[in-house]
Image 1 (cartoon, rainbow, N blue to C red):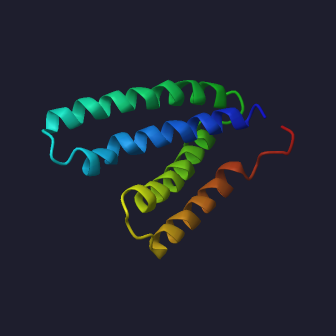
Image 2 (spheres, rainbow, N blue to C red):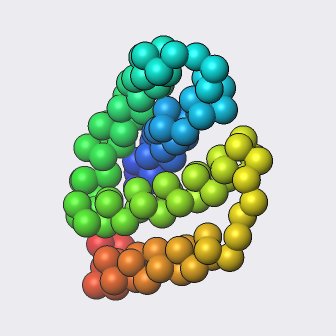
Length: 117
């Protein structure tokens, strides 16, 4: 369960990050750029409130490279869901191909990990 905590925190962090980066394209498109920047910074603050402790906790169980690959996998999954559900974008086969590349990245980063280690 301890290894799951940082992953859950990074998932929450990524939800905030994705919204901070792209949510303004839908929700604040008619607002001045400065308003979008300030509101996105506020959302990004919430992201950092989960991301920093998530990475600190995760670094007790994973290497830096493993944490980065975990984060990239989470990013692609969250982004695909966000793009489809919130932004009403089509999900294409390119998401599958990108996902397969991330499977390869995860394989190489975790292939020498022994179970129970």
